[in-house]
Structures are given as C-alpha cells and as structure tokens.
Length: 265
Ligand SMILES: C[S@@+](CC[C@H](N)C(=O)[O-])C[C@H]1O[C@@H](n2cnc3c(N)ncnc32)[C@H](O)[C@@H]1O
Image (cartoon, rainbow, N blue to C red; front, side, top):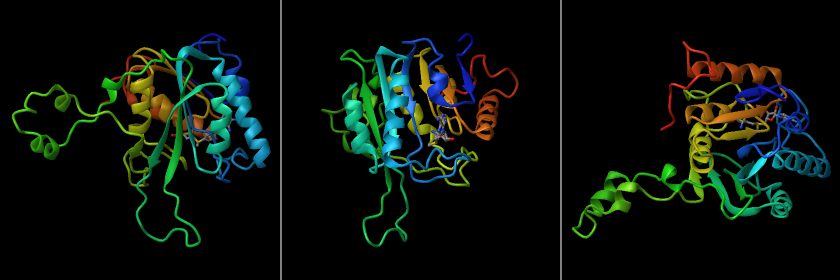
C-alpha cells in the first residue's frame, strides 16, 4: 500500500493492517473495544468471551508484524480481560508495566455488592531489550511545595529537582467530561495527556505510531501534536469524520498533513 502515513482508514483493522509494510511502526497504541457492550455503532463490543479473546489474538498478531524490533505496545483493557490478554501477550513480548489509569471518578453511588471499579488497566509491552524509551521527555515537574521542602543547601541546584520525577505506574488523570474542551462525540475518548505521554516516551520524534482502533482519533491528534506520524483504523464512518475534523482543527489554515502548529507540552 502506498501513501499510508498520517492516514485514517475507515475499515476493519485486521484487514487493513495486513496491507501496511512490515516492521514500520515504532509504537502501537491499542484501545480496543473492552467487550462491555458499549455502542460504537457496530457490534464490536458485544462478543462471546472466547470469540473476543480469539479476535484479540488475531489483531495482536496482525499488528505485531508491523512493529520494529525496538518497538513498544500499550494496550488499554479492564480487569475483566486483562489477565487473559496479558498472558497471551507475554508469550509474544516482554511486559514492562501494568499501568493503572485512575479515572478520578467522584465518590458517589457506585456498586453496592462489590467495590466500584474506577480504573482502566494498561499493559506496556516491548519487543526487545534495547527498546526505545525516553524518560526525560515525560518527567513530571515537582510542585512548588515539594521544591520548597527541598530548599536546604544540600538540595540547592540539584539536577534531579529541576528535571522532575519519573512517572509512576498509577496515572491519575480525569476522564473527559461533557463540558471538557477536549471532549469529542465518542463514548470512550481517552485524554490527550495520557496518549501524549505514551507517544513522547515510546516513539522517537519523526517516528510512526500505529493505532488499530482510532475511535475519536486521540492517537492521531497526539502524534501530530508531538511531531510524530500515525496510521490508524476505525470501523465507524461517523468516527472517521470526527477524526478528520479533529486533525483539521490542529491547523485551521494549512493542510493537516504539513507540520503541526500546536506542539504537545
Ligand atoms: C475504545 S474505542 C477507542 C477510543 C479512542 N482511543 C479514543 O481516544 O477516542 C474503540 C474503537 O474501535 C472501533 N472498532 C471496533 N472494532 C474495530 C475493528 N475491527 N477495526 C477498526 N476499528 C474497530 C470502535 O468503533 C471504537 O470506536
């Protein structure tokens, strides 16, 4: 297939991915249907458990062929299927982290016969020992209070205090509410803050991010804002239009394929 960089393909990911050249992606960010019965305008989130796991292995195998030896994969899941999917992935890659996305759900109502689930489970996997990972690009600045508490002379000028700390494996980032500026018309849109952290840490500048399930296009937007390329797939034609709109909004005046004007922080 020619001309596939920075393109959204409105089609089934397993079929579409097969047409990409092998070994081109630096990073795969996959946010598949969780099989919880959500309505994405298709039946993709309503499968029998065994069929869901079989389908998961099929798209994973298709996508991994496209990953470079130095490449990484992040996969969003919930506790319902993460045990089975992590076991399957550990047969193919090295697991580096289980990241907990704490969606900062307010403490109201919730389950009464078990504990309320307020997090998503994200697996971070790599192909090889020398995988690309830029920790400096994703350090978290210390807040003023912490810096002040470290103001004794032994800390003054300490490089680590200026550089910020390494992100931990619990990411506390609010889910996108209706009134949020970033919010698009998609039921499970992920915050840019999360996806941009993955892109900056695990894809070199100018590299390529593959997203089999673009949804509202957060990965595409994050890649362009961070000066990386993307290629992705989405079944629902309405979401494909939404993605094109989000990409076009990055550059109201020029064409979306040129250099992006809004860099990621
Ligand atoms: C969890 S959502 C992705 C949300 C996305 N990360 C975002 O931030 O907007 C999963 C998406 O995968 C799409 N999808 C489901 N099955 C698919 C398939 N076989 N090929 C391509 N897309 C598919 C659904 O329509 C849905 O929009």
